[in-house]
Image (cartoon, rainbow, N blue to C red; front, side):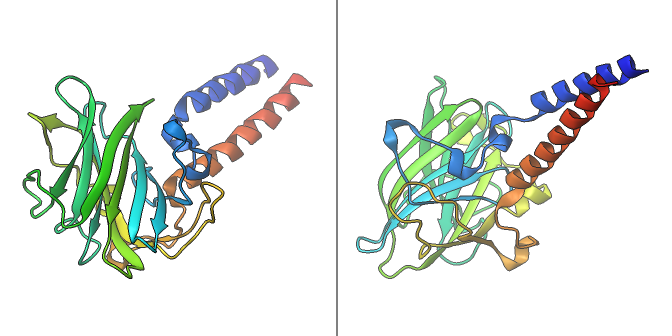
Length: 242
């Protein structure tokens, strides 16, 4: 009998270890970037297992961001943007990253005016630089843009999709997680100059249906898995003593 439970223990342990993916086992404060990119703030976004790092220079009114998410499929895309009117998709000034026909990561800008189709275009904000990277199934958008003077908050929208056809991102799913990927980013929050500081500067919009836990689904998944892992470990130790 003890042998049966020991086998069950180790089987469950292996399932748990393989279930934890890089995008869910990390929180923003543990993420690092190449070229020593540093940001003063970060947050685990409340949907789509996404993360945002940012630095806001109020004197220059420039916002530098790094947005991280896993696309809905390996050939899919990720997007992050600012809506000057409301936390909603239509009207968002968006950066969308994906792999081009040669498999090279690229990021393009889109003024999203419709749910049905999108066309590459300039943004209403001056984009100082932008680039995209991909590693271990996670895509990253880096961008710096100029905001209107005295900006304190912005409406942010993020999304992931599964397909790109002829260089054009396809329509994303309309699952609850996709529909909740919007909120308000408080630029006044400051983590100081010591690198990433996890903050609660992202609040979900009233229409998103979020509960107000602003650290997002990823950290909740990690906490649950950690508790389960500890239980299995103690259970296994008890079995070995039988």
